[in-house]
Length: 78
Image 1 (spheres, helix red, strand yellow):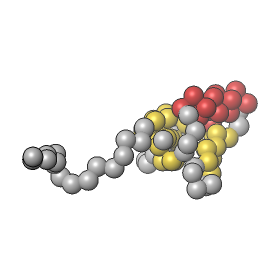
Image 2 (cartoon, one colour):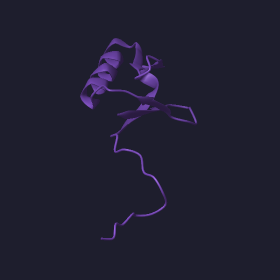
Image 3 (cartoon, helix red, strand yellow):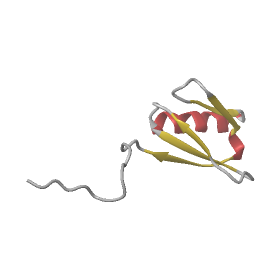
């Protein structure tokens, strides 16, 4: 699953590919906000992104639906 992290006063969002469930990611953010610490998320390649929790503007979850190939619909003729 891809998690896009919007950061306050940043022009671009951060994108992290992770196998963690959305509920787990939200629980990590909630805990970091309560403790006034850094929100960190590790991707599938063991790279870690860390953002001050109070600067996170939004989280956007994108489910993996596979890659689309080509320019249009493919039809099979019998």
